[in-house]
Image (tube, rainbow, N blue to C red):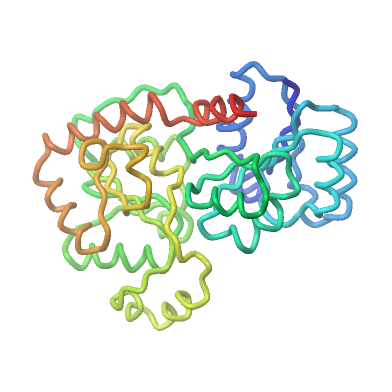
Length: 328
């Protein structure tokens, strides 16, 4: 199949943040491994000239004449009439990866413009049906399918770590841990240590006894609301009221780490809870479980190794894309 892949080349369209790894490795490289012919249309340079973008993407499509145009929409950069025009001539598909909080104000508007839609939210499928959209595929985020060895460290560098952008909820969570005497090494935009590379991230996962996986949806825990004067305003304004499965749920075990994650509905469809990863529902449970698994090395290692096996066998973007193409 000849595919025109439409995505951002750089993370959030910003060159200084580096290559969009999920787009390049997770999607583009997976298409190639599946035997497809791929042409890429990156729209980073058009983010400040959306009028030119409409013409450019249609020109590229007519030039390539693809069997499928595979979009990963970032925002509302493409006009509805542009997508309608493309879908009238070519089979189109878009990856809607945030339907848990973007369905009503984004997906609802754009999904009808594509031939096919991919959602990562099982609870959104019925919403698509109500819009009259029958061609919807349920998929999920995953880990980058990189062939790297997993080596158990002779000595762990961190007791607990967290990788992800700083956010009011996450800062409160980490501060709560630290006040209880549990040091958490933090990496990512907004933390003092700053962001780290993919290779460094893999090392942190393997060198941490416990890898925390925290969402960034708002919390109504009174302790969070009182943690900072701005937090009630953040909670009131935020559209992220629902937690969701993200790539990190699969990356931590795939790259060799033990995962202690915030519970997200349907995570049990991908891992056996308590056997391949461990979930918490609030900060108190997270503290209790952290202390338990810091004190019980053998139990933690058994769960870690089972999680690694599951992620490596089933939860890569290659697996996801293969399943998607079987349904097209």
